[in-house]
Image (cartoon, rainbow, N blue to C red; front, top):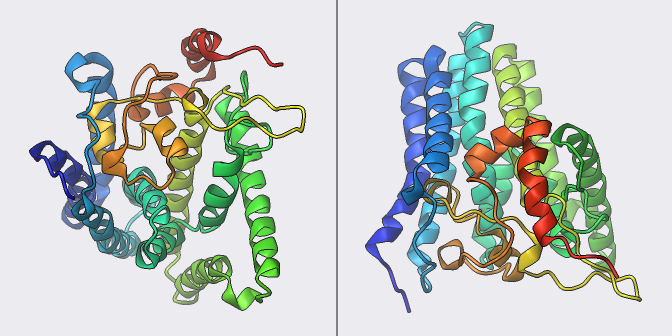
Length: 343
């Protein structure tokens, strides 16, 4: 039974950002990056300084209608990509870089986040939409590695998407990019072999091929500016994704038993934040412990569980993580309070 509340209208912010970015791209593509930077900066600063923004409304009961915000985002992102790609064709290099930043901010911060949420849905259509969103940033293997790999191995040394204590973001990135890609294809190969299916049945293969076709078509048409834009916005979106991965489990480790198996995932194995603006824009992604403990729970129902707490929301933590000395100075005292001695 639905328990809709007026406070849940905040999730409509998930559609406002791409709509504003689309308007900016259509109106003045050369200045699109300015708007994105201002939004990012505003969220990061206000969540760090305004106490009232450090807590979101409590999780609610089932609200299936809110899933349409995620579904409605998909055509909006596609329109944004097409508009920005068209603008890039006639733009100079600074404009292309600005468009890649502005659009990548949306496709990475929200597009990948919403794909992540849709991919956890039990509905086949939702999972198909998730593949579309990940295909838009040329990162389809996330759809295999995250659900079959990361959720099994999170907060262990076997997981390329879990950062180790003392590991900087810039050392983490090559390890997670390579490790996640290789493991995704291994998992998909094993999955197809168990089902006695050929690669023609693999959505990973089709998604990867689709991205190659898009890039090839842009090159064949001679739209090199649009090709450069698409690659750069994808790269920035992936950087945002992997930086969030770095933040979410930094330094946290599940203990292994005598049989070598890690202990069950618990609230102490993920960093959390409950800041209002980021949770509204990112479908409660910052309530990360509850997401891992209850992976099928829809985003409006996620709760702010006790456990390790980040110094601020994701918008600010992404910037902090890019500066390793600052990140370590803020996180290591927190880490010392939650890490348990191994047995």
